[in-house]
Length: 207
Image 1 (spheres, rainbow, N blue to C red):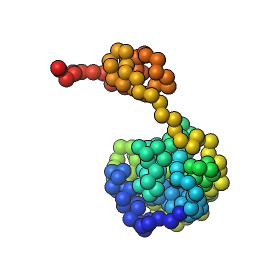
Image 2: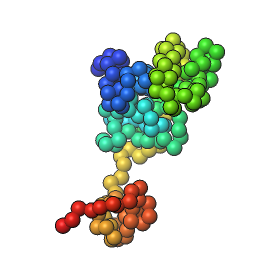
Image 3: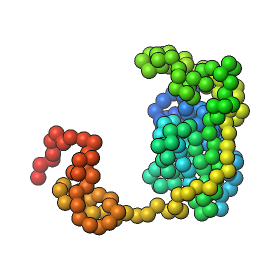
């Protein structure tokens, strides 16, 4: 598959979508990775699907550049793996291409900031000083653009996900009454009422 716009424009669109400046390292690296994966996979017979192994910038690059999103279920999160990697695959066959930022190809002498960025070992000031963070990010981008695909690796893979996600039934909670997705239609409390809520109710709308 080929992009229908320039990579520079996709980086700009992704930065707008992500809410950061265009030359953020994760956006630049991620957009190059998606471009590479699209070239490698060619034209899939069925619908294009994607997997991201991280929840950060790369996931937004995939959504903007491929149209595979969490909402349309063509993008799946495998962020429990925590790696800066993605897979694009044909949903019908499950066959695809995995692209990742390869630490073994990043020379710590030639590209020290990129190497530190990938290992999350940059100076602690990147967490507190936004000016320092931006300057560091600029160095990371400069070093990556010197190398580009030299520091990326890829694999042909077959994805184990089912062709189509199952549609779980929606069942009213026996405590709060809000319908929630459940594997069976047996009555019971929703996860929030069962102790897994991420929020505490302060006020509720009256009748």
